[in-house]
Length: 228
Ligand code: ADP
Ligand code: MG
Image 1 (tube, protein in one colour):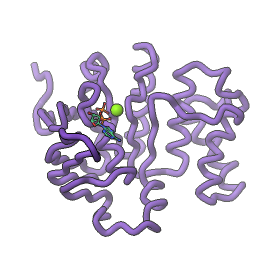
Image 2 (spheres, protein in one colour):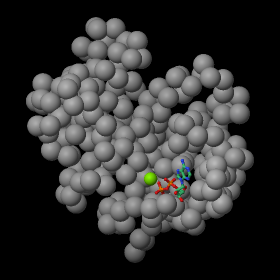
Image 3 (cartoon, helix red, strand yellow):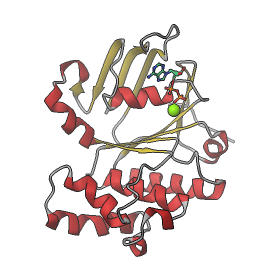
Image 4 (tube, rainbow, N blue to C red):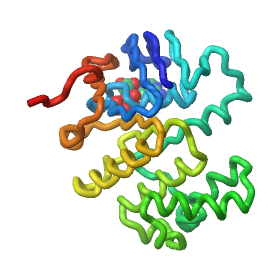
């Protein structure tokens, strides 16, 4: 599903690579935690997968699409396959919860019928059915993140990448958001959850890829974690 083969990224004017020969293979349907401290290179992985940035060297293949073969006109299609959520939610303040989610469908050309069918369904899944007509300023942080997740999921991407989705949330709310991501994963979406929060990671039994100064330093795939 996601393949990085010796991917390096050196940003212009920087001396040290943000990523240094990173190789990673994520199978369809996996839930993978990408963990590392600030500056480790986590968001750079997202930017490469989303084609916001291009690697300096190495190969990227996602869902059978080799990024070396991508043409500009393929990029909207690629971005529809990859849903993204961020720590700061990025909601439109003057639109309701329903409209925030609907907007993502409008810009990808879906019909009003499709929107009116799909938005309530996804709001139900994320637990916000009763908040559809609220504005973001009336929501808690956890609810805002649920809207952002609904918006990312409504176009039914194959992959969901969450870049520090719990960074602005308290511990209990963070865990609820992680549980929602796990639920989405159980519906079949491949999930990459980026985090620096070691507390959350300890509570989970999923694959953890640890990255430090641009390199993968451990990957629990294939290991039995916490076996007793
Ligand atoms: P993380 O998400 O793990 O905090 P990033 O991937 O954002 O780390 O950044 C990795 C490294 O690359 C950091 O040293 C950061 O300063 C640098 N970096 C990130 N984006 C840019 C950019 N656009 N230009 C130059 N350097 C950047
Ligand atoms: Mg980051």
